[in-house]
Length: 459
Ligand SMILES: Nc1nc2c(ncn2[C@@H]2O[C@H](COP(=O)(O)OP(=O)(O)OP(=O)(O)O)[C@@H](O)[C@H]2O)c(=O)[nH]1
Ligand SMILES: [Mg+2]
Image 1 (cartoon, rainbow, N blue to C red):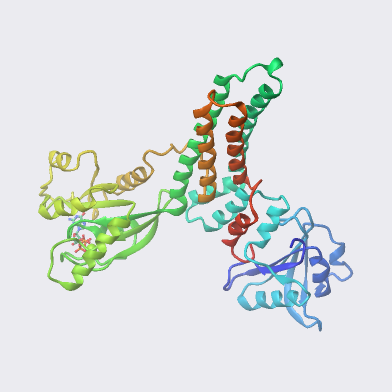
Image 2 (cartoon, helix red, strand yellow; image 1 turned 90 degrees about the vertical axis):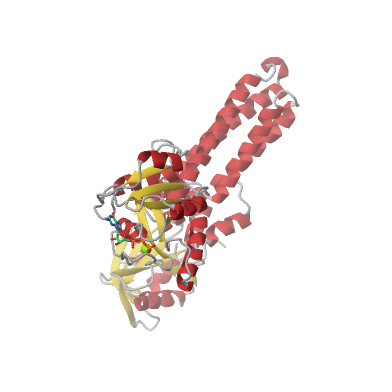
């Protein structure tokens, strides 16, 4: 139901400078007026224009003071929801915000559902669905890079990309219909032109999908496992990348028994970094369990950093561990290059790890770490687009719609010239319909429900 009055605390719980209770609906201004005493008497809230502020007291029905507040007024349709909106800035803290919310609710304003403000913005045409989805991405972004991508989506970048594709398809469809309706004037459909256009759309969709995969890495982040035999410097690497002493480092092999993990940002990519117990054969029960867990961590990892110790050289233990990670996306780090005695040669590395990225360095002297970070970025983005290419964020829903559109286009390309124009039209319409879903033109109610389900209350 649109238009009834809703309210929610829009700021995060906890103490802060201010908290905001947001209200939206047909008569929120009149309702707040009943319980608001402005400092400048005589100026009625309902007479004020949009985008204005009023300072005063929020009171209860008996005119007892609830809190000192600053009211922000936005009038329909020029507000976030497209309706009249009042934002009550009260003192930050759980209690003031709750008291303000309870007071306005007693005026017949109900509590908003999660995402209801944004849902109204969508239903009132202030945002399309892909922009509404971008709102969540902005809130949840873990790195600057991820947030910038989400902001582009919010600014309508995806929507514009999709419109371009739709225009192309509509053009092909128009050519097709003209040939159908006016065969004498227009003549046969020029198949090579139509094919060219459809191929262009398909390529563009492929690019979007690829760019989406890349953005996914910035949004969701990656799991990185550090592994290697005992004492090679795994925990030292974790600490160096985190720039804090998170894991215990000693010269005793088998120091790390459990998985130690933390989050870092490597070149804009959110990384969950996990240090593992050095893998070896052992009688020690605790260490054995640790080693079993290490294997689980390795299987979950998107990227494995395999560390070797230049002092000990590559031995049977290293080879056995490497067998376990051979199929993974990996980087080999030859550590302890500061040592006088070096027992790993280039030829040995090339023989054992053909085609694998190898970084040499010393964690203690902090050499090679920059190259390692750069290699990590490359390893997870390899085969993807360069950074100056298309940048879009694509969620699962949008990805599925793009895949459906692509399938229809491939079908139409496959049968072009072999079936009647009517049949061709069906696939082109199918593609158009799928693309339309991305911006929310033809979305079913339950899909809309699901999109807003993920939002927090007050957004
Ligand atoms: N010379 C030198 N020693 C290092 C370097 N990196 C780590 N070490 C030393 O190697 C020893 C083992 O380091 P850790 O980081 O605990 O090694 P680990 O791989 O986590 O060992 P486990 O937890 O036992 O599997 C410590 O004494 C570190 O100071 C390096 O670059 N050069
Ligand atoms: Mg360790």
